[in-house]
Amino acid sequence: MSLISNVTKAVQQVSQKVGASVAEAREAIDQVISQSREALEADKGKLSYLGTGRLDKLGERITEAMDKWLGANPNASADEIREKTVKESAKQTSIQIFDKMASDAFFRKLMARSKERMADLYD
Image 1 (cartoon, one colour):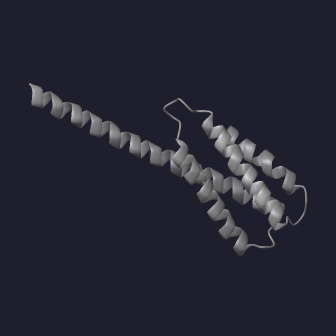
Image 2 (cartoon, helix red, strand yellow):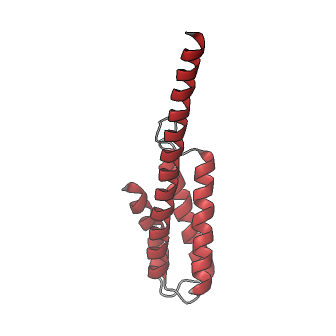
């Protein structure tokens, strides 16, 4: 998927150096989040668009997970940071997509039932 390739490109700049600093890791993570958001915002106006709230939540969750991971792995190399960021981004994106699918299915059923009840009311 293009999202993963964008993530890989963003973090490759940092991965060329051995033992990325915290500032470099933060920059790579921020680049990944912004590129992930841009890739997902390309669907704006389509049914597959996640929406602003879910995109914000996606960025927050990736940041939280990576902050926690970097705290536990302060001497992580740039390659390790890149691999973990790509995995976390894919994981959180999948979670948000499944959440949207569940919400859409619920509201579809709710609207169908509402129409059914309205038809019964006026018949």
